[in-house]
Length: 597
Image (cartoon, rainbow, N blue to C red; front, side, top):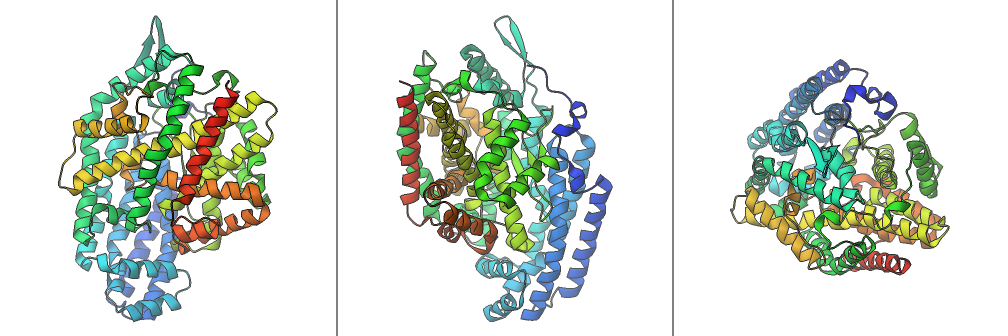
């Protein structure tokens, strides 16, 4: 395994093409200047004049035009540095662009405040008169009880860039400061790094290499645990202060408010999965121990494949064929989007030093999508790419049907289209299964890639996160030792005696950026619950179910999560879909066990 190359050494065909957004940094900065001018014009024209329905509707129409440009500028700001955190120029451009966004947000904070101050009948008149901002104005009306004095809102908005510093600090520690050196196992040395561990060594069928890599990885990140804990504590304390200032009953209600989700839906995902999925996953862990002849099943062994020798390498070109086959059920228009993603270089496949780990999809309004991942020639990469293309397809459909202000889908639902694509891929491969070993391999891919990642990894993060906010809600502060203890407790509760929680496992809280995104981690299981039910409906009903799903993709934020799920034929007001999904996961694990006898 070779040392990761510098970004400048990576072939262009493996990089995304950000010129699809802006040809140069200067062009992005020029648009940022336009944003400043537009924000100033809106302020001068409408401040203290938002007292009639017409003025509110006119103001929101101009605000909508400005937001279309901000969407491009802010997405470019995120993307320009994500592939190389050691690029000082890119970091500078990102900072300058984000500064403009914060300034515009602060300058125009009066819009929400002054609209919220109006009588309800005036706001409803504005909703009736508005063309592209009906939902956005409705949200202001919904948020009215939690609005602060306009000057307070402006002050908070002015702190916007500073409030993102905990997340920025986390990324700088993770990608800028951590030095892993080389990994020595016996007499052999291996190159080592954050991405190398999470993309390669963690999955290695070589037990000595895998466990040695886990220990070396944890030894390194432990040196940064106090600084990382400080960053995270700063972030959660911010959320608590915001909750108190706005008069929410607690920090959970504050964070769930923007998701259009109540506390019962949040708690249900965590409690039901912790109780009912755990036995199935313990059975899966025990199977892995048996198949690999392990002396014991440890936390460092949970990512190994059921059949690592039957894991063919997959090129990017072959992945395209798999994905086109698996997603063809969604129609030709969807496949056109998939082809465009490959042909126009929406995807950054590169593996280089300083690049953000994991994967994400950024979708600026009506300007395609940009997908970050690291290609390792594995089938798991195909599932990851299909997942991110699910986000791309969702926001293309949503953006084509809705105005820019109505594309902010609740995070409770946003992972449903992405995980749906993973399930469609799996169903396609199962239908093409030629023998028992291939079928077992596909089923194990579903568990290892789709359900383990979304229903276990992120769900355990959510259970940990809920306990973190409980402590904060009670007035406590958090340090590295406390966070270690919380995470270890969650792991021990879920895995029981089936998995040994070895030293270092408790520091898993250091590895995810989702904690800096509100209550996001639990939404992976929520979205996958909906996706599972819809995918099974598509299997039963075919075209009618697909058409309903396409309606969901187009709906954007015009419906809340319950409404979106209902449109797809799923009732998430009860725990029935979640219980059925867990039973389905259990049935897959049972079949894997049977095929392994």
